[in-house]
Image 1 (spheres, rainbow, N blue to C red):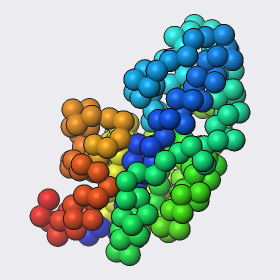
Image 2: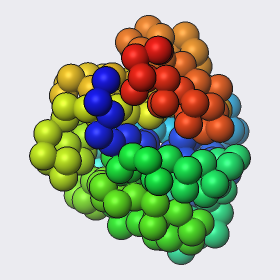
Image 3: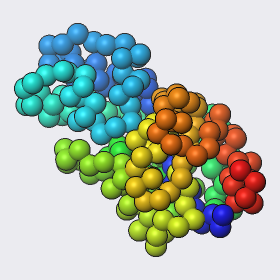
Image 4: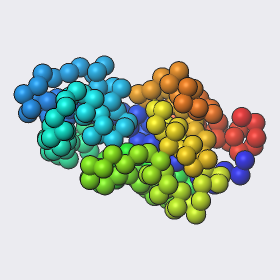
Length: 221
C-alpha cells in the first residue's frame, strides 16, 4: 500500500477527554436540574456529535433541552478543555516519529475550534501538516463521514489514507470514503465494537502505530 497519509480521531485516540467531558456534562445536567452521572455512563457517549450524546443522556422528548444542555456544556468546556484534556501516552514522540514519514491530519466530530486549541496546548498541533478538521459549532448532527471527507479533500482524495480511531463511527465514517481503519484499544471503544464495525487492524495504543503503519505500507499487515 502506497501510504500517503494518516487521519486521526481526537477523543480517546490522541487525548484522554473523559475527565473533562464528564465534568462538563455534569455541569450541564445540574444546570437543567438533573442528577449528575458517573464516568461509566458518559464513556459510551464520547465520540459521536455532542447533540446526539446529549439526547441519549437526557432521554427527553423535549427537543429544546438538547440545545440548552449543549449551551451549558460548552460554557464550561470552552473555558477548561485546553487544561483538562490529557495527552494519550507517548502523544508527541509518536506523532513526531510518524510525521517524519507520513502526512498526518485530524478528523474529529468535536468542533474544530476546540480541537485546535487542545492540540496547541499539548504541543501537538505542529505534527498535523495535513490539517485539523472538525465540526462547526452548529447543531446539525454532522456525521463523521462528512468530516473525513473534508480531510480527504486536503489530500486530493482518499487513496492511500488510513484512519486511526477508537469507536465504531470512526470506522464507518472512514469506510464511506473507502478508507480502512486502525482501531486503537486505549480509547473509549472495545475490541469487539471496533471489529464489529469493520476495523481492518487493531493496535493496543499509539506506541504500536509506527511499526504497524510501516508493516501496512510494506504489505506485511
